[in-house]
Amino acid sequence: MATAQELAQNIGKTALLQVAGSALCFEVEIVDARQRYGNLDYKVKPVMGEGEAWHQADGMKVNP
Image (tube, rainbow, N blue to C red; front, side, top):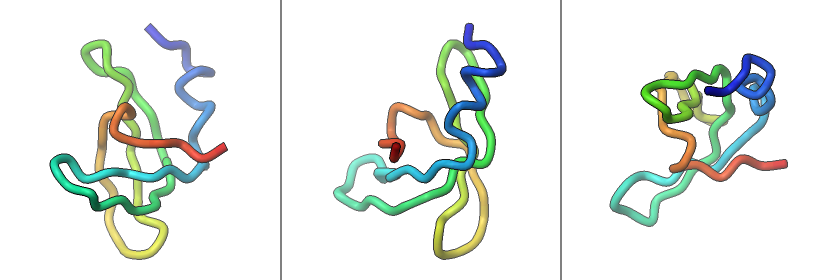
């Protein structure tokens, strides 16, 4: 299980989120993180647009 510090390391960074089953990718900002059933999830919001949603981290490429 990840520590709070490990979960927080990407909060505030941007990432590319790929929509499952398509070539569509868009930039999001990571606003929160959680570990759920052994998977890392990020709560993200689009850089341009509205809303927030939880997504599995393995479907994203976090920018350095």
